[in-house]
Image (cartoon, rainbow, N blue to C red):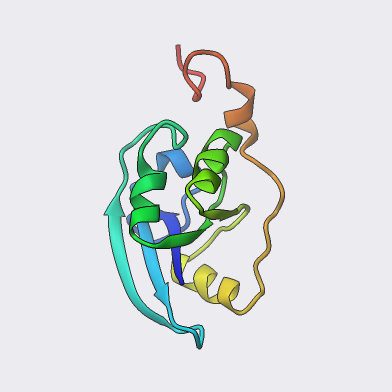
Length: 127
């Protein structure tokens, strides 16, 4: 199994999927152990309009552990076969371990700021 996490330089889960600097991709064994971590540089901008979902899917990612993420990005990831778990925060490696142990569940909340600005030409609300 491969799990992706949008992260900052300090390996913390980024609060907003579309603003992260990197994606850490964790390879997990059948025993639930992390055996490899790769880093993919993020193209800054809206996650629903970038090609990150296809890049992650091509790398075998099936789970995205995210902090804040908008509905458009969730749809794009889901359409690429990637399940999204929202509401994650803290050290990325620790979050992955907790998820593998069954201790992390989807918060059910999408990024409110992202949803408010949808349809204004730029998802981030900048004009």
